[in-house]
Image (cartoon, rainbow, N blue to C red; front, side, top):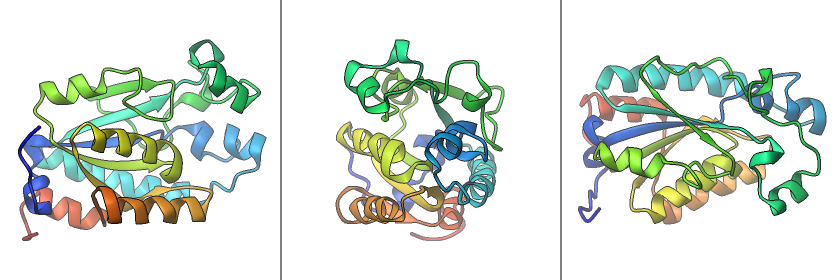
Length: 209
């Protein structure tokens, strides 16, 4: 990837843009899901985030951008020793469970679903190969948690040469400090933080950058 696209208008051409929907799954987002039930995390942000993502997914589809769903399976049989040691107990996003199922927003029948076993959607998956085969150059990231799996995925994407756009109203976390830190880091060092409305307008070619 040698071509530098300096403006957001250049970056958000739908034919080379992919919307990555990260970890919108029950165990991360739902009342009664693993994070709320086992760790007492506040997941009240998830409904608003899911609603905003649903709108942006529809806009991306209409514009002709790629939509890719990145979901976690954290069964211990898939995890590294260090990851298991940090988690301590198995139970989050187990393959085939209700907790691993999508939360509110659903992949289309013809859309790619990537299953990951690390925080980053690129680690140990074919996501990079899939994107490169379709000449994707820009990644728009949405989902949860802003400061964990969204952050890890966007950093790896940036290191691999993709332009990074973070939809600020389509990401969330139980940690407001972590959420704010990722937004600041992306804005200062990695890519662009902007609203889903502006992203949709640029994908549709309705406004200048």
